[in-house]
Image (cartoon, rainbow over all chains, first blue to last red; front, top):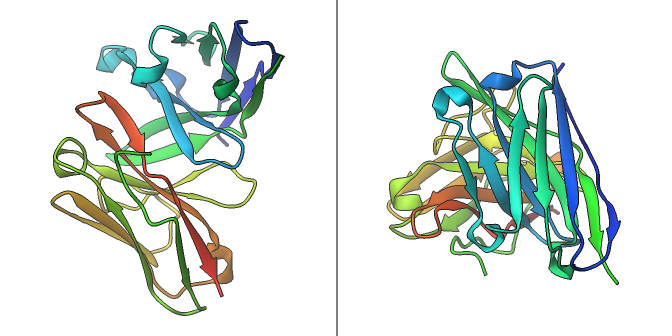
Length: 122
Length: 110
């Protein structure tokens, strides 16, 4: 069974930093494109960014408004995805989901964690 | 305001067929594959459709989708009470150089 478990969320003040983790199990992590998506309270989904597999070049793409403040990284030896968030703003308050995309015989599957809540407030 | 537009709400009665639209532009839907997600209340999103019309394993064939030009649509036939959820389209956008989600459509089963 595939499981994605996010951690690291919490209450922080504006301007502070936070690093989220997403630990995966039950899948070949180095074959998965990993993505962060966030959802502000009562709002829709917002793509944060993704990091491709090393086979696909390991490219990292970010949502334009977040580029420069947010950094994605992966450690394939630990089956873990990271999201470092700097200079946090109140509008970064959201539930942060990680997602894994894999292909088996050209068929795509996406797996999602249950999210970790980040609250930015003074 | 997302560059990809969905109606905020849709509704239908059990057994009916409903469609949800997703309107974009030449920088997104026209040139890239569309995915659709279902988000049940209090749950993480679930992939319903990828590559415009492909269903992942386990997704019932009551869910279908299509794309034409700068628009895409999701159809749900044989509507069931459990289909009551938020539905999102998602697609790569060349201008933003990132994935954009539609604003989401809240489906109510009357």
